[in-house]
Length: 242
Image: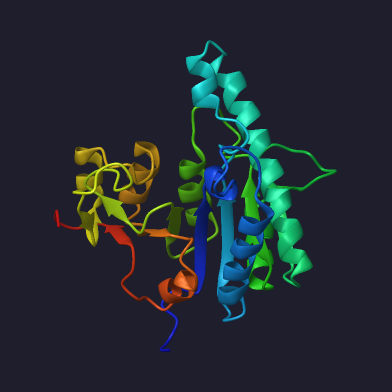
C-alpha cells in the first residue's frame, strides 16, 4: 500500500459496539476483534488514541428520562466507560500492545489521571492511550470527549466507529431506501440533524476544522484502509454542502 495519511488518530468506539449482538455487557469476541484491528495499525507505526463509550452498561440520558437526576446518571455513565476501557486495555496487553488508560475522574488504583503532556508522551513512545470518564463533566457525551481529547493530543482525525458503513439519509437498518453520503460538511450534518456525533462534538470539530470519518468497524481491515487514506465510510469536513 502507499504512504500513511494519518500518523496519529483518535478512534471513538461506542459502548454498544462492545456488546456485539447482545444488548448489554461486553463481548469477549468483539473485544478481541477490536484489539486485533487496533494492533494492525499500531504495527504500521500509527499512534492510536481511543475513547470508549459506556452505553452497553449504563446510559445517563435514558436514566434521566426515567426520573434520575441527569448529573447522577451521567456520572454513572462515566464510570461505565472506565469498565470498558480497562477491559480493552486488558485484551490489548494480552496481545502484546503496551496500553495506558487515562481517566477524567481520578481513581489512582485503576488508571492514570488525564494529563495532556503525559498522554502525548505515551503516544510518542508507541503506547495505545485509552481515555475514559468522558470529559469528567455531566451533560457532555463521549463523542464530545473524543473530539476534545483528539485536539488536545494533536491527533489528525477522529474515526467514529458505528454499526453501518457511513452516514445515511436515514437509518439503513430500518429504511432500505436510505442513501449513503460519501462526504458531508459540518453545517449539513447539523442542519439535517444527522446522527454522526452529537451537535456539541460536531460544532467543536467545525470550529477547529477537524475531520471526522464515520465507518463500520465490524469490517475487517478497515482501520488499515483508513490510515492510508482510502475512501471508505463517510468523511465529514469543512467546505460547501456536498
